[in-house]
Image (cartoon, rainbow, N blue to C red; front, side, top):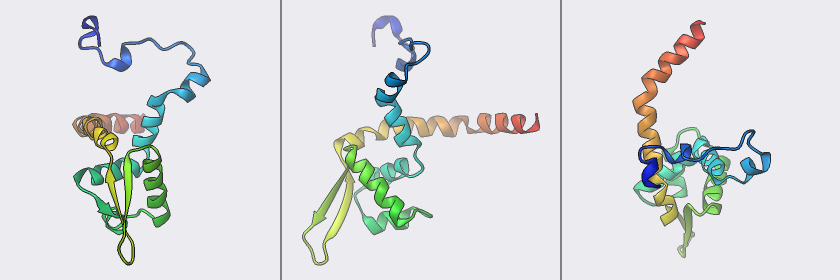
Amino acid sequence: MSGTNTGVPAVLAHELPRPVPRAELAACPVGDVFRLVGDKWSALVVILLGGRAHRYNELRRSIEDISQRMLTRTLRGLETDGLVRREVHPTVPPTVEYSLTPLGRSLLEPLSALAEWAVRHEPEMAAARSAAARD
């Protein structure tokens, strides 16, 4: 970021065209990341794997209410995006372990910042929701 934009969030440093073209919105990598962290399970899986590698059933037991199908889809998606590594160990039966890649680890800091923001501003958001419900 240039010295003239000190203190201005990067997302606000550039003007968006008005209206935002559909093709630009579809091609924007930021949208992909927001869909990922906004997904019900993906951020949670990344956070759990941020602590250490897990076997599939460990993850499943660690996340209440996630179905086997949804956990499999979530892990495959994270693996496709390069955030999670799936390693098959040659045991009988084979053991599969999931861990974060360096790219996945790099997501932990911004994810933590977003979580801190949410916790810090939750009372304000709850108050706004209450006020909106009364109106």
